[in-house]
Amino acid sequence: MPALNLANCWKEIYLFIISLSAGCLFNYKLLRIFRDYAPKFVCLNYHLDIYRKFFSVKRNLLFNNNTTTEEFDTRFSSYLAGLIEGDGTIIVPKRERSPKGDLYYPSIQILFDSRDFPLALILQSKLNHGSISKRKGSNAYVLTINKLEGILLIANVINGYMRTPKICALHRLIDWLNSRFGRKLLNIEKKNKDISNIDSNSWLAGFIDGDGHFSVRTTLGSRACAPKIECKFELTQRQNDHNNENNLEYLSLIAEFLSSTVKEIRMNKPKPEYRVRTTNVNSNFILVKYLEKYPLYSSKYLNYKDWIKVLSYFEAKNHTKPESIKAIVEIKSQMNNERTEFNWDHLNNFYNLYK
Image (cartoon, rainbow, N blue to C red; front, top):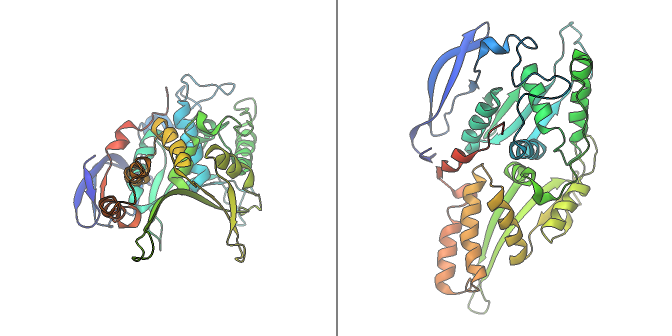
């Protein structure tokens, strides 16, 4: 995709199919964005004639004894699991019907910063499911999967790749699906947490795209004080999630992988947090080695690439030289919330659902 200047531009960034039949959209459009005025609602649906015949057509979404005709790409599966655990929600109804008698259905939602709208689109297209809507009152989009075919697909894709307490929500969803359609038809196994090494798959990359942060700090100081330059990566999570499940276990594994520690912060607040932060150049390069193998796909990829440029000055041990500081300050001025141009070429290499 071409570079996208969110400050002032019209850009065709994606081609998608929508339809308008019994509430479903049916048309062929080019999506354009002008500044922040992106579409309020996007619905992607390929091969509607197939999806209307759920359990009647042998397609990739149908599971017989918990197997598929095609094998999922483990990179896609682990990345999606990490992304959902970083900034997603699995909603499973506790009751079958509402007081008015309406049936309750589960839902899977993934939150994206407004800058990451192209990632939401590409993920939607790979899954062939979901709708994207602008979240009211915030600079964010939500990819929501409500259709049972899509929920069944995602449950099988991420099953076995979860590492956080959100696995409990996935297991509740699997119980709901097995109960809804009968174990003779589905019988989805509730797989345990992934206990493989953090660097064995792309889970951490997905989790970072959801909740990670790359930062450069420059304290120029006075004549009496030497300038201070810091290049760090950090993850911050609530100590206990909304189900009162503690997040220390998996954060400790991430910290161990990065040769770092988990620190308690905001202890005087109602919702204290844990923080994992790289503490030195060696710790940073452990992360670099991993992300070169399992890349990021959100706009954080661009921040990561700038972060690496700054890290190279540390590696050469010349980051305190005046000319280096000037270059670092310039790089920092275009990172994170200061970024105005976005190049999405890296999405061309996004994983496919199947091998």
